[in-house]
Length: 132
Image (cartoon, rainbow, N blue to C red; front, side, top):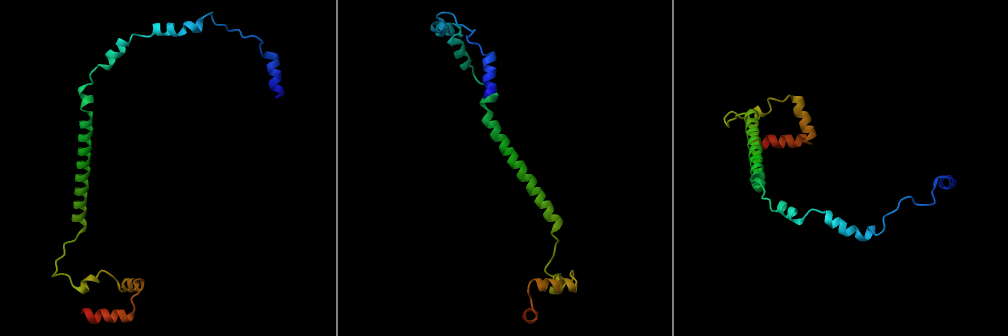
């Protein structure tokens, strides 16, 4: 606070050097209105017709959205069909047997799967006696 007081006492001027002419603010509104452009020029700008592109803009946006949806759907379906053809093996009922289902697994893998599924010896004997 003391520094601020010292600065103000040294450099603060007692009088305002800026002055306004007599009657300036009384005539300010009328002078400003005289300097503004006429309202007819503003009205002419408002009457200007929009271009064809501006008028059809919503239609362009709707058409672009529809094309985007069709494109994305087509690409997705083609990808799914290609993936289904590559991954799905063709199996007929005549070639499948219960034993062929387990040929791809080792005995150790089958025991791990049974332990994970909580299959005990009683369940195994029941499955074997009922099915085959």
